[in-house]
Image 1 (cartoon, protein in one colour):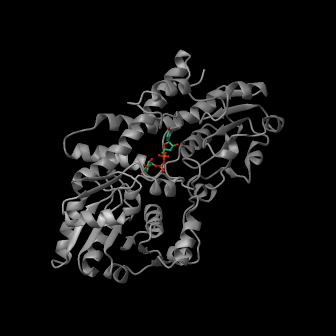
Image 2 (spheres, rainbow, N blue to C red):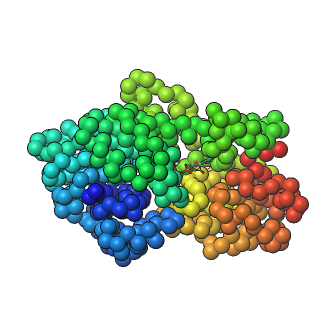
Image 3 (cartoon, helix red, strand yellow):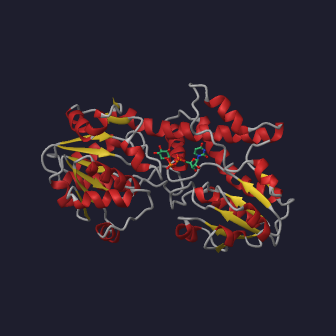
Length: 434
Ligand code: UDX
């Protein structure tokens, strides 16, 4: 198959590279020339474990190329994926589809022969219909089937997720695309990954429903954690106790500082808006959004309470800035609100993150960015673990204590055992623990 990927951001790049690894001929396209130049030199625009290696292998084999030229890249393609950004539109929270529509128009103008156009970007229900309309308007002779094929990749585990998916969802209303899409995913299909064919609108909704449900699940356990603190229960045991029920499932029941990242905040907002627009409001999702928003600042207040309600003039060591480990992504990271709350209350902050510092510097000002965890901990009044990077899981606590003004550890990810930390003379504050 000749596959063209329009948009070499996170989703497009990972998907394009993995398709090349399946044996397809893939062109990854992006308007950003500096990004394409860098990729051609083997420099990755994002941090994702294993990505550079799989890119290098597939470039070497000749199956993967990069281009800024949509016209020539689309011409001979059997399948063109649209994997451009769909940011939340400023003001109304709707997904901004202008990049998707612009890509659709360009594809229509330059494709030849029967071409399957696949939206991989997360798009609201009905976008496929609009893409089809735009294609027909731009080129009435274009022979195109428009398909929806949402991605369910987690940052930091994207290649693994792509190669070993729980399922592949393919929404189409034109049956000619079915065989083509089966061929695109043949290696996975042969490995028994279920290919779920649905109508196009259904597939579009599946993506939002999945992310909405997961966001709700996290938010549920976060509220249970708050209750645990009040009633003297342990949220980790509650998670285990409910997660062993196969109907609930053990995953996504880690209580923490609230979800962040590029997907959950944006997709829950878009789902709520779509539901409102169709006069079928999703109150569970609306509530999830507001609970999660409030939680991030509440985590800042939790640190303040751990320091007897006053952080004026105190130094807080923040370990971890990204919204989760193994990524450099700072989008909607709880660290932003936690630090803001601490700063508003008069604290100074020294922060360290293994991969996220460059992106953090663009978002969080007025803090000290340091070269390692112990540089942050030196002279601090408290340590706050915001992101569960592996290197924070085994801090040398006696060393840390010796460097600090007061030994307080606020562990927003529950990566330490309270008893062990207490043994080293720390005041320990986890999430929902007792
Ligand atoms: C998510 C979805 O998992 C993926 O299927 C979708 O396509 C894109 O969005 P991602 O944002 O990369 O992926 O990260 P994920 O690992 O799902 O975590 C999202 C957020 O939830 C993080 O902030 C994480 O810390 C938080 N989280 C996750 C919890 O607080 N508790 C959990 O139990 C799981």
